Image (cartoon, rainbow, N blue to C red):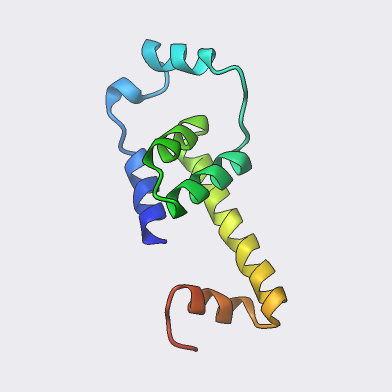
Length: 105
């Protein structure tokens, strides 16, 4: 999971050529016919990270701002932990610790 957050941090450090307002970035944005919401971007981004699909990671990261993507990834993580906790009849904290390979609290 640290890979996901490391990638999110790197998105925030884009070069000036990649920043909003740059003509090449704006042109690329206009060429995309579809508008993506932050949850869709987060779902695609996390799934691509799990599959180590760098091309899909980069594409999903371009759909929304780094802040929105970070929020979406966080929301996805919370929902996944809650769903697993219900499925396993465990607390969300226990599930999160297990997923991260941490000892029980």
